[in-house]
Length: 465
Ligand SMILES: *[C@@H]1O[C@H](CO)[C@@H](O)[C@H](O)[C@H]1NC(C)=O
Ligand SMILES: *[C@@H]1O[C@H](CO)[C@@H](O)[C@H](O)[C@H]1NC(C)=O
Ligand SMILES: *[C@@H]1O[C@H](CO)[C@@H](O)[C@H](O)[C@H]1NC(C)=O
Ligand SMILES: *[C@@H]1O[C@H](CO)[C@@H](O)[C@H](O)[C@H]1NC(C)=O
Image (tube, rainbow, N blue to C red; front, side, top):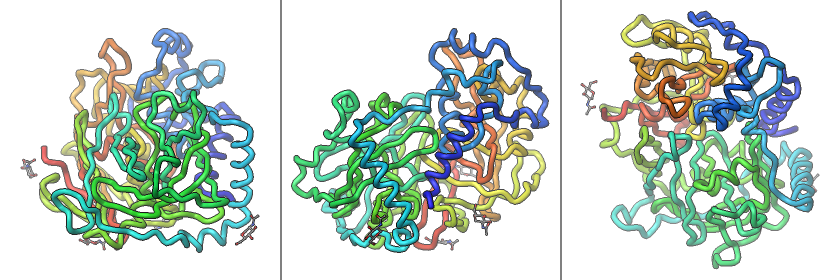
């Protein structure tokens, strides 16, 4: 059986191949009617580079294999350049592709088995001899937003080599750019060199291949090494050494790989599935938690083993996590806009995903929200909902697990201008075309989030304003 992520990927491919998606966004009731826009292609050509908002939305849709709404297909039913951004090819050579295919076949044949034999490697963990909080297991690193908060990056050490990575609570592989990639792929990146690490050990016969569903991906070999994230250390952590990466990763020279922080059941290493850094570190951390403190246009932090109460206002509210899918998923049963009345949703779920830029919510939430924003429109040329940059956006309150309404600030929902004129802005809140909803960095900018692997729960509190 293919893995969940592979399923997502296949769905993404299917939706691409079928090409003419239903006008899902258009069914929504908020005031602005979508009209077929004959100028779509021209608008894109004119702008040359699609806006960061459009790219982020396409990436999120495709990461989760969702149908692209009609706004992302041009008048002729073709997918324009903006949307193709994520449809990239692995940059590798034939031998790599062959190894990858083999690994995939193996993984499939042994799926049931590998799922239950997670991390027989048995990583051993040690509290790091770090500076201040030396004695017990915890670690902190800065989380720095890339331009327009597209992603949040943090430094880690692998076998003593310091490498900046994207922390992703929506996937479960720790893979890294390496000196085994082609020179073209390595250019501008920090590349992990296994030969220069005295602690690196090859995991014979192991391989990984991850497809993020958005069309991006990476593949390669596997070994173990010591990973230190801001003082929290795991020895024998599975390191997935990329020998092929997709072009969107190649062109993003700020990031050199991903640190997957969802549940280990989504890990793609075969024949033996491996544990995430957090799973390995958990037993020696002071508390079995990691936290995300992501800020709008400013440096925040990721912390392991400790909940820093100076980073949020009041106390955390905890919600039970539904681990069925391997994501940090919880129920969402109601919402309100600004100071308006609370509306029940029809029992949907949402996941907290640091690796997705925008907040993708159910159409009921998105319609109700933008009906309160004058000038909001389903903007075909931008491929999503936009509004005048001068608009005052209300706050959005969304239920998390039944006992807490998380406030997402209107200011955070103003994602970014669609172009250099700064007149029209792209909404940080966009519609999902499926369940669960995917609440990405827009939500994290308003809420401090603690991921508790001890009792599988998620804690939230508003950031200090
Ligand atoms: C499945 O795993 C077993 C060992 O657990 C191995 O002998 C076998 O070759 C694997 N199957 C495939 C198709 O790789
Ligand atoms: C999980 O543990 C935290 C303490 O770390 C506790 O406050 C919270 O109530 C627990 N949550 C659930 C859903 O059990
Ligand atoms: C947990 O998630 C799965 C998959 O999204 C869903 O089918 C199931 O209903 C959820 N369970 C609960 C108790 O909400
Ligand atoms: C903390 O929350 C209270 C109550 O919501 C609010 O009045 C106060 O301004 C907040 N403090 C900070 C520093 O954000």
